[in-house]
Image (cartoon, one colour):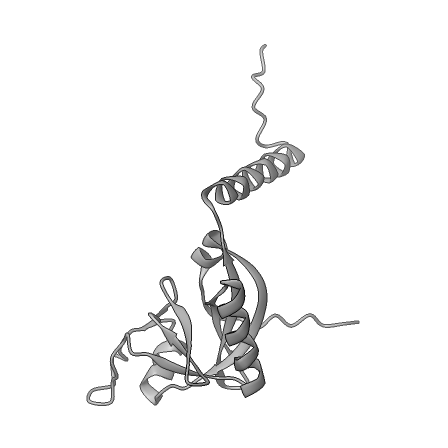
Length: 161
């Protein structure tokens, strides 16, 4: 009997799935300080407007907000500081080439802990147009209506006595 262990995510960037097509995902470590790790464990992290950039062969995450740890006094860092990501050099160079040639972007999708270490799931994404977003919303609405009718709770027909 196979056990399906899902890794619990501390934070997820739902806006990224609305604004972008996620083509590939990568796992990266994050260079953090002690109070930042404690704050992430408490769930005080926001990925909504975050993006990744590659400079001088290193990959960084920008716009990721980690709230200051409440019990950390002088050891707290700037909540919006640019944080370095830890990936293999070959992966970084491949991502650099793909983002420059094909016009794709790197977006943080989620943060989770794996063996006690904070990991960031980075997605190689292509931007959606407005009509793509409307199509996705229409598909979700249709699926919701189908599920509702299968349960029998969401009948839109009026019953007359």
